[in-house]
Image 1 (cartoon, rainbow, N blue to C red):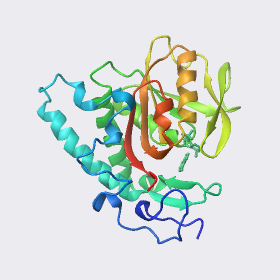
Image 2: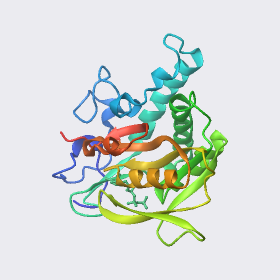
Image 3: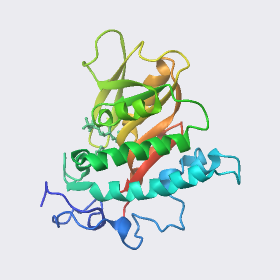
Length: 256
Ligand SMILES: O=P(O)(O)OC[C@H]1O[C@H](OP(=O)(O)OP(=O)(O)O)[C@H](O)[C@@H]1O
Ligand SMILES: Nc1ncnc2[nH]cnc12
């Protein structure tokens, strides 16, 4: 049945069986094609072509006790967050398996878990390089946590919006995403030349939105440090299109 939530493990991206209702999350079960065993490298912490691996952030053999504690806290946060996601077949168009992140924000504890997980991840992934000056969030779900993350990092928050929403001088670029096409805009003076920037969004699917956002950031002078996503639909290989380091908290929807 279309329009009702289903669990990750029962629903490959094509085929869409009937709704079984929310159920136990596959992270709690033996590994499957969509959830590789722990012996495999975790794609959420390994960037394309090894561009970023948080374990490399410290000198080899020097990982501190605090970063080890951070890693273990991060894995339990990831499990809780992944469990909260719901999937809706054939939304917004037939053939799309929609990942609904809203249950995270409906629960204050999960909401707090998310911001904590992102803060730890960004510190592990980018913190050893340079301070992040600006968090750029993509309309609209990137606005749900971008500003909170920016506050935690002591960074500015800058929105990239769909066409026609931002006043003043703007830069505009077209993009295609998993289920449509659109235009993104950024205010031309939103980032000072050379400021370090991370782009954050909820989902990376084809990577079309993120490529466009990265290009706009660079166009107005930002130093793009990388991309941070709550979730990556790995079977769409979106990260291959991105030419800056990528960090994703959760993965799913890999073809079985
Ligand atoms: O990797 P891609 O294929 O580009 O797809 C990812 C984008 O698609 C969604 O945005 P959308 O504009 O659909 O929705 P929103 O306004 O609810 O965030 C999602 O929030 C990402 O921004
Ligand atoms: N499958 C999907 N679920 C939720 N948001 C998306 N944005 C692009 N593809 C998506």
